[in-house]
Length: 161
Length: 160
Image (cartoon, rainbow over all chains, first blue to last red; front, side):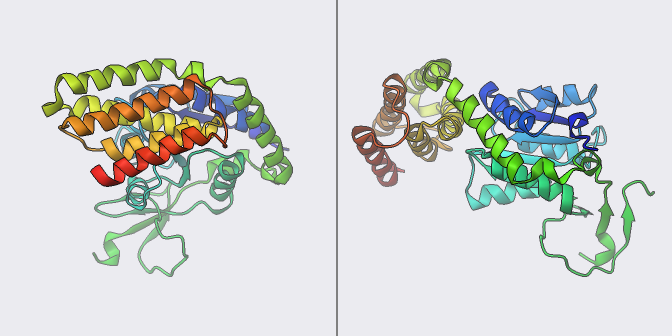
């Protein structure tokens, strides 16, 4: 039995219409629970009182933008969930900016305009092929390589010490 | 970096526990979501909704004119507003807003001081965005609007 009606999705965008647009797409597939925030700081405040299973983040926001929020969620000792799936939706499409977003620790990237098909495809990608997380001195987040390659270092589950 | 400095962690895929019915994301669901999206975008009149952003942009432009030698903050404000409008234009059927907003973003990104020509180029973009909104130039096929956008893009290529 589908439990999508129990999924809790956070939408972080400084524009109310963009939040409503994303919400309309997700409501059409049965999502019923949303937490909305207008910028990164607002999102952190709301995350203190809400457990969310997926976060959709805009890039350009003030005072705290989507990159800063992603870095906080992935790296801060106070992060409510360093492993929460993050999809960034943005008008930035320049290669350099896409790489900056990737390096902040997002799972997926969508260039605006937001299309229902691409948003649902990115969610499907996380559901079916969630990438493992990589922890190095400089980076913590989903594996930035899409290809599966052999690795002989230590591997562990998130709930292991 | 040696491999022992790299740790691989397999997080619990919590979202999978909720999106556990493949029908939630199949083509029928996509079609339903696209219909909901179309219905929502048709219900929004971007021209009136964007008025506060246009006023904000005009005020930031006036701040640039007042202090052209140190205008990084208002320029950044205009960049953010133009970037926002660019995204909204694409989603709410105003491709000219996306195009002119994109041109303005390219021009003003990182501008810390502005000469008269640069201020004129910013003003021309702000005026063009306002004209497109006020004349509700939705969709494609606006010959004059397209010419203006092309002219602005040429200016940006030459002056930036």
